[in-house]
Image (tube, rainbow, N blue to C red; front, top):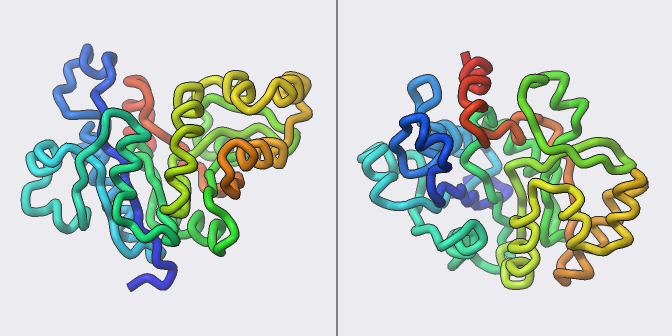
Length: 258
């Protein structure tokens, strides 16, 4: 058993976006998209299984879709299959249900097929320790552009540099009650850096516009709003932020995988 004791919650609920439907894909959601003959969800779960820092894997996804895709192989990919909720936050709440409140959980998006076990381990190592309730991963633009310049992102410019959010977060399971309301607001604004700053305070918007906003400013305001100890963590590995967000991303990610 891994010494770190992390449980991974892989989020694979939701509906398939319209651009994929229009292109002829007939799958439950993005997680079930084939990439060079392997379903994206299988790539993500297989990499989580290879991570030394993870003890168990919970996959939040429709049971029928999972069983149809993997059959008896499914038990090797995930330890538990949990029904998704009505939205992202409700699905996360379902995924954390029953996890001891003090246990750290690695929450993973299932549209980051380039991530590998060692990338998850590196991020887990950077979030180790009992001080923090929420450790949200980000990737610096220079690190991303050095490896994947053709992959697009929504970038935010802070004083420390230009960065984007990743597909991984470590949270303390018991913090979910206090975090849910704030997460709902953030999820609705996640594609707009200005809207994200506006959630926190007008002063942060001003600082963002004039490029004086710092990561510490955001962390402090998040703590004030949620009552939780929050921080941003540099993922180091850009693979943790290369996601299949649009139909056009499929071809680019398949090119990288080749």
